[in-house]
Length: 224
Image 1 (cartoon, one colour):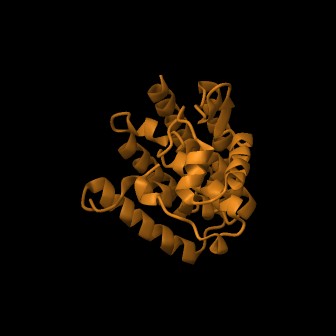
Image 2 (tube, helix red, strand yellow):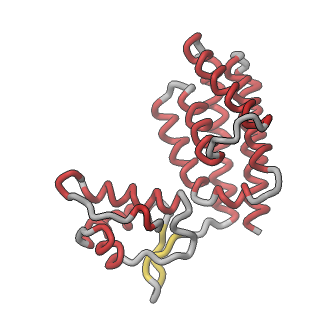
């Protein structure tokens, strides 16, 4: 993990501690600080965070049930490596639910949401044209995705889609290694946001499915 994140935790400010540890480890996996196949040693992590091994063990058990880590004989707990079949499965579910999310977003669009999306469209155009070079591309991508899914105004759907997107983020760096994919993905998001802003529900849904299919192909190509 990034040494900048190393600290001693004040247990009085962390309740329940197991949830904080869970979020800490999951974020390290999603952000790529912990990579596929890398060991997670309870003792080392306990010393690093200045906590007991019990909440770490509980957090790892929870992460294993979700597929982020797995326990291997004679090796211990390691970060999971997604198989091609698992990647396809996740993208298939995301295509259906992501398509539904943008369709709902376009159907529920109002003046306030239009204004917010207009601002986002302006930012995306600035980045695509090269006028804005200050943005962290990966964080900007996450902000766009969050804005798109929140626009559906369906908390339950947002929760489900976000959980699927977390799996993708765990190996997102792979697809961005494909030449031109980062810029292409941003252009696809721009078209989706425009369709939502204009209330074009069917178009938004179709564009999202195309985007997810292109992302899946990029991930699988990078995986190979």
